[in-house]
Length: 239
Image (tube, one colour):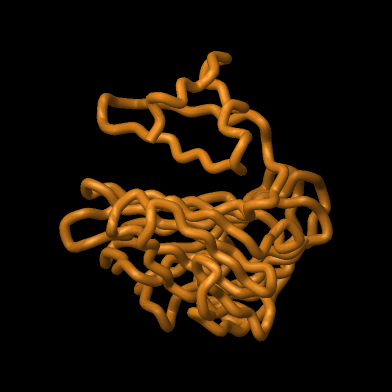
């Protein structure tokens, strides 16, 4: 399995914040090859900048971490390869503005599950979408329009959604990492490609009385195929 690490490259990270990724093995004798994009600390070293390997047993976790973050020192574009199934999670602590900071991140998918078409919801004007290439000669466009970015592998394009839903296309497979900012809160999610079969069920938890919204997109004619708590969604209440 091969993973390329996407990260946000728009907001500042607090002086006490850091960012990185963790790798957990699912079986014994898992060999993991790690290529950090820039010098970083790890579970076993205070500074690593070249490709190295680690041997993990089932349930063991290894981290690669970076502080003093900036565009030139970001770990975005780092590579993780393994001979057995692993879980890779990216995290960024202290992301935000001078008055608002949050921990954001998501679990990654391996590069063989990436796609070239994506639907992007906009939650606020602060939203940013980070598109990272895994191949040279990658071209990005929004809404079927002109090419907005030409990327080499490991490079990231920063996009700002302007419509409630935007259609993103690329000529080669990419990672799409969506960071939303609303009411002094930040969150991040790896966007699945639009043709991914995915799962037919999802669990949601509402932890307080703040605004809570669900974004669903589907092909025309399939709007009645969704239920919440086994009850059909009343489309008259949907905007």
